[in-house]
Length: 545
Image 1 (cartoon, one colour):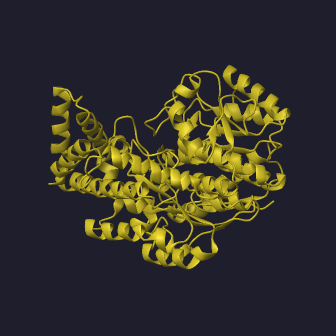
Image 2 (spheres, rainbow, N blue to C red):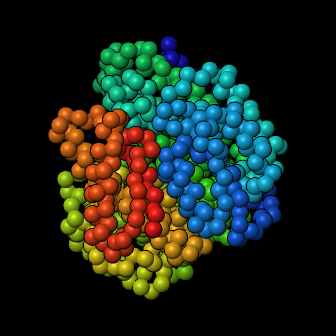
Image 3 (cartoon, rainbow, N blue to C red):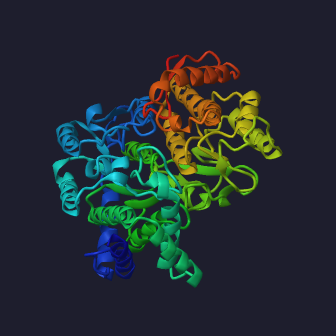
């Protein structure tokens, strides 16, 4: 049933430019929306350069969403208050929306701003948004509660939501159980659904789409499409809230997607219904896990009355035209959007930019996973060229943040080996090379902008943390242990470490420590590693010294 309902719903949203219950906008409503956004921007900003207090409701308890965000901001003397751990989503349970509501209302009077994940308040977290069976009525009730936040909380609200991802495949407990078997078929089906929505489906593709439908259980495909429909309705309600000034700023992140996918299609629907809204009030961005820190950076910049400038500097080759994995936008489109989201502006040249965002991209524009065979510690001619440029910038005292996005899910070994052996990396404002390109770029922008208010010691701790995580672990130790597990037919342990967690932790710690001892920037660093979600995908790096 939900297969046809979802198709009908998608068709209605494109005809209405805004979804069920949303009438076509009139010119008067366009003017009103612009006026609301303008009024929000002209509100007086409280400048508190040294000690802001920001309430933060994360997507879940993964380090990139919680601990690393808190550590980044506290390095700049900004107090970040999170809900009690028991209220936040983990790998084993959803969060507690009702308890977080109460916590927000209790803490708000003593805070300067709040940055909130609406997924946590509506679904119980990011994984909850992909797996929930909450009724449409209950979801609407939770959204209605969000409407009251503006009057309940006497502080600026920065909120972010997600468009449900469309992965090519997925294992573990982060999707419905059936996705581990029919995920590739669902992805292929969603590509054709997106193409059909654009009126570009060929007769042969229509037959393929029908065959995919027949070969999947209707209950499973229907479950996935029903959840997408519910979540799209929620996002459309949230954009109406943003239009009516209920948030100081609101962003929707497109989780793992592609140029043809259900995520891309739904993003297009929302774009059509929000085309007239100012980017100072609302944006649709690529990536999700970076949004918490990105919006906190925005709140921080606005509270301090600053609008820093950022200049993107690409390595030789495809550069800005690169289309990263897990994204539907080229860097030339997505990077400027993330700069705006951080409360900054894009500089037209590097000469007077407050921050130079250096982006290491693949010369041919083809992004691979960090586990690719060619991700070896041997620098290319392009690597040598970019390292030379970065060396000149750092020696001249420029503020540089590096996004290492030549590979997904980890660092470029050849580039980083040459960089760390050729240049003193201590002056680097920040380094990021984790997960998707959009995740890494968002963190690189945010940490790079905030670094100006950190001590050199605090900045060094964050820099070494990311090097150990993104380079030593993700591109090397994780790949090594993954290969070993596959060799012994224990690939299942990558998604659930079970009784082998202690042994694997010892091995990856030894590997990372060995690499740390090989480079001056990390030599002598004392750190511990842990698996917060009991899987290989991420670690929590805690710098001791």
